[in-house]
Length: 509
Image 1 (cartoon, rainbow, N blue to C red):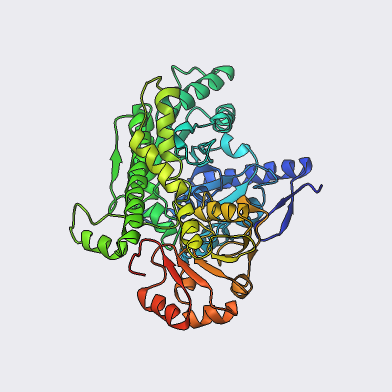
Image 2: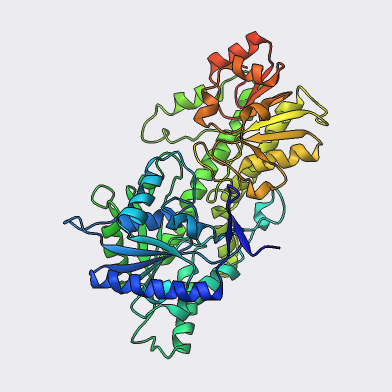
């Protein structure tokens, strides 16, 4: 097996050798010395994932009132087969993520190629020279049984390893700013003890140099406003001590638009960590509510989307009612209630559970099965049924497939022996479903389809005319709309052509 890292678009990158790592160290030393001599602070961002890479670019783009860059950013990504490819891609001036936000490629070109204030590396040396480390490594929740989120837990082992790595390398003056969504209590009861332990091993007096740790969660929306959702959005933060809070406030004020989007400082990191998971639990519950009512609407001849819009006219109290869909995906709403529920017993040794939040996760996780129920109303036996699934990302106009509800949909369709073809303009490779190719050509995905499922509302799909879909299929397929992606006019056109139509939440269809 080759010692390579394979990018989503199929390009192979050979993992660095020991000699290349030595050369990289020399390069980092030279760059760091030059940047410090220019008066810039050094920031290391740990983790070049969907949030970390764009956060790094935003930090590298920050300027003072004279238009001079404030920071130089080392974007650190481990040299693993799974993720190393991000390092050479970023250093070429290209983003390692696909998005409909035109500012994403622009800010990477600007900071990496033009300003030269952002560079990716695989070396831990980036932490040794950093004044600030922004932690954006992945931390997931494990749900061992489908539809039973109450059994979910958080495996902190990899996160602990990441923190221990920082403790072994950072200087005592370095601020650790945790942006990873973590269970409440993590900074105080997990990060702080680990850093203290590693400091003491290095002979650092933790009374004189207590670890500087802060928490500030982002509210990133990796779609058409990807960059703005990081830079031009409200932030909540806190720290484990007053100096940590002060340093975090200064850093965030320098990087983000805090004049138009003021910072909110909470009493301690337990509070800021709770704010993130409670915020997303609220959204998950909101969506779960609409999903239940969507099923009700289907049975009594009501369009839930028109009902929703009528309710949303009540501004200030009900205008944030979310919409039902194929299901809920992504990195936040699927796991954050689980993290909070788990932390009650595992971190704080408390009894009880967050029943409403956990039940919402169960409703959302199992919601893709309702789309299968809609298909079965026309095709009770799914064996050998040709089904085209349009959209495999978890949200429109981006290529993030983490916890996509399309994954659940396709898994259960495959278990029923259906023949599934998938298409998504933003996804080259479906990491979670390696055995399901994501076709480049929508015509190939729709060809001979008995069922066409509009799973994600990418603009490309919304713009297709019914006649075109039917022509590509070569027959009159069953059309299944998972979240009002096909408007009523087009649904009626499908009917006139001779297609049968099913639409989640639309009892009027």
